[in-house]
Length: 439
Image (cartoon, rainbow, N blue to C red; front, side, top):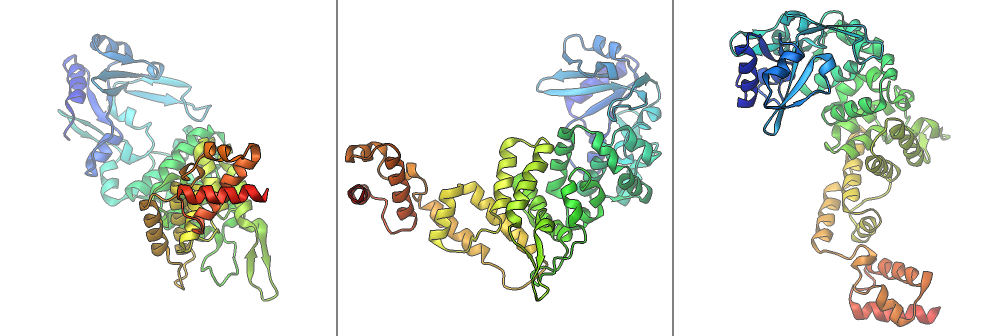
């Protein structure tokens, strides 16, 4: 395993002082998978006090010292160095009530969540892998260290992390591990919402439809709005799947954009409440976009999602049934109303939504709509009031004032968007004078 110089500096300093030291956890896992580790954590037989004394001339981060962790800053990098330890009791479902320092790497690794994360590597001692993490990586297996239920009780966020590891690294959960994840999922209700939201954000960009269905009990625990959609027959000739399975395929088909993926996840949660059946037995969901947007807003507020993301997701869901067919005037209006990024995201959501139907009938021409959008944007078209070739001062000089002025700007913009009026200064002034005469 090739370690950066700043990591080797830390290891060598501790080893030269007589303390066994290993790179541990995710960096070892990623290296064995052929990936470049994002960061490096070390574990050592040295106590926090000793670690601090061995790096007197380095900036130190001591926020985790009481749990045995000292951060050493070298250049622009920080290495977290943690004393070998064992942990007991987790009354807050996150932090151990008692931490005991030990001198055995195997004991330290035994407290970790999954075997693929319970490996350590030393430049002199090689790989420490007492729980078979390397073999599980090769076999594509996600397995909890020791008793899975105990691991998840210690910190229920490990349940969501397990789903993320499985999805990200294409690992199949071992039977007992998967059973424990599903059984212990209600413990996630004890977690801080911010931690749950952060983990869901890491999971969503990588999830497939198969993953979504496999981990349904895990995903629906923090988002119970999805529960009623499981197995719900849409009774629609336009859909091959129940609502939950449709959602799974829609999420998987969406681009890896947080707003679009979250919108795909929540876009149909209002369908159950708005379901009706006509005389022919066909299912309908009148007003489901609006209801789904309201429910998504509540769910994202509960999860402490950032305001900007929540508002964009709610907008996309509310508008996900709005037409975006390849028509210049229509697309210009949408760009004016929503802005470029939101329209592009909405088009991506609608494409994913259609793919998620499981039907191969006449698909809307999304490619043509995208091409027209590119043309409009390339033209630097007038899409907002500030893009008009005249401004408020021009209208004031003509005699407009107060609300009358703002209304005139809206009318002029609308005509430009409809391409019945060119965005030319003289043409706009003439049109404005006509409006004034009608007042």
